[in-house]
Length: 420
Image 1 (cartoon, rainbow, N blue to C red):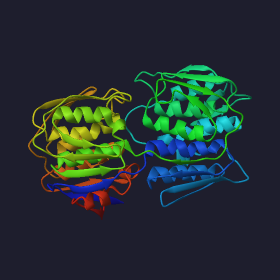
Image 2 (cartoon, helix red, strand yellow; image 1 turned 60 degrees about the vertical axis):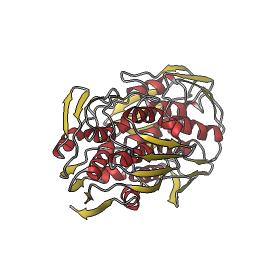
Image 3 (cartoon, rainbow, N blue to C red; image 1 turned 180 degrees about the horizontal axis):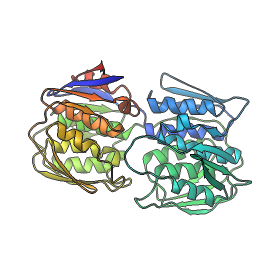
């Protein structure tokens, strides 16, 4: 197993190109189950999670291959409606094969999901949504077993305790596109990745309106056809690179980014005093002087993304003043706090709040990644820290960031891999 080693204290400079969005490509790959025709998905990042989804598609009867950022998907003769525990348990997003299997075959047996350990993330909204479409659902021996004689459109409220659910919205939308009649999803997730999935489904022949808003309307169709689609840029990778420029006092031009997807992050950084120049597809981040501490509340989109909370904590750790970071999506998503404190950060957790007292600098130390975004947080901290930082369990990082160390190295970072 590899670990990542960083020699900190170097100002990053240059250009970086953002890869396709992990959280968009996974449900879009799952959506290819809705048709027997060939589909071409472009701009696909070569990630651990992407390759896991491709393996799941193959196990379900698809022929799928990733080459040069393009996934070609076609159908084999035999179809399997069982998504096995060995694959689904490694990645939560793989649970989104439930909706398309139900939509196409009216039956599915899908293992309960795994993924990052960031707190309880139940699938009750998924099951509520597909039950509303006329599905009989049982949970047995760690599997969701669902079947229906016919899927029928329905009015479904998908709001949860902590707001809307991206994956539940994806699953219900994919099941509903082949249901008879009209489906209305109220309190739907508004994330750009949900919108991107809807655009792909529309290209396949689905009738969807309102995607990108809290109310999505779907008029069921009899069948879907193949389509070609290019994945949107990964807004979380883009945000991470924006913070890399600031935390190292650097100067980075970020390419292939939609700034309109980063409104809450941009607002918070501008309040902190960051300097940036935006075009439709680029963001130029330049350090122009000491930032000020700000408070952060994570919220469903278009609020501040929970997937940027850990990275923002790294930046606030070296920003003078007191900042309070409140996690309203996953209240237990603070496993990175202890690791940052190992690097001489001053962070105290109180329930869903983290109180960060900014320091002049952090110190390199051996740390351990607990989840995907925590690993990115530790990379940022290592880039800014004095001395050497070694990060264990970087397989978490490989789940969501394509060639991160190579991209950082091209920006001037001293970063390399070593065997544990």
